[in-house]
Every structure is written in structure tokens, then in C-alpha cells.
Image 1 (tube, rainbow, N blue to C red):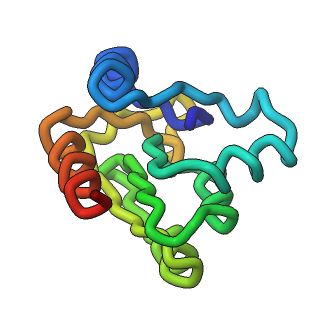
Image 2 (tube, rainbow, N blue to C red):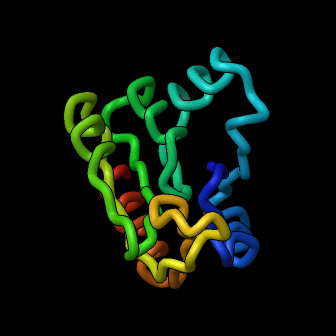
Length: 129
């Protein structure tokens, strides 16, 4: 998932996610709504910077893992409530907030370490076997 909020080390993270776990990079804004519905109804996990694209978890199957990457400068829990309603496992990862150009904290970019992200994914994969 990609949007206004940038994941500063996205290239490094995506390299690990794609090579070790088979993730695909999807820019939701490039897909019409019906494709987003289809995508989210057929995923096991979604990882991305916090943004409106996470609202698509309403179309996900129960036990789908949603990892919401957020800056420590503007942590939010709105998708936790949504995930609980639909049975999606929601885990926020709070990383280092890097100020957005527009100065709005809710648009701050974020940098995370790979190790905590991998632990969450590995634990999910172990439980889903």
C-alpha cells in the first residue's frame, strides 16, 4: 500500500518481503474500486504505511493480517476498530516519524526497522499452518 505517507525505507523492506515471503507491491490508487475489493478479499497479509487504503480490510477474510506502519509523531487506532469488527488481525508498527513537506503531522513519513516486521510475519505464518 502506498499513499501520501511515505515509507522511507520502502525499497529495503519490499526487497525482503518479496524475496522471503512472496509479497507483491500494489499501489491502490492505480486500481479501480472493484479490483481493490477483489485484492483484499484474496490476501493473507497486507503491509503498508497508514492510510485510507486500510479501509479495504472490510473485504478481507477473518484472520487476514493487516500490518499498519505508522509514524510515532501521529499514531492512530481507527483501523483497529474496523479490524475487530470484521475479524482481521490488526497490528500497528510505530516507526520513526519524519516530517512531511507540508508540515502536517498526520502526513509524516515513517522509517521502521525490518526485524520487528519480520517477527510479526513469521509468528502469523506459524499460527496459520
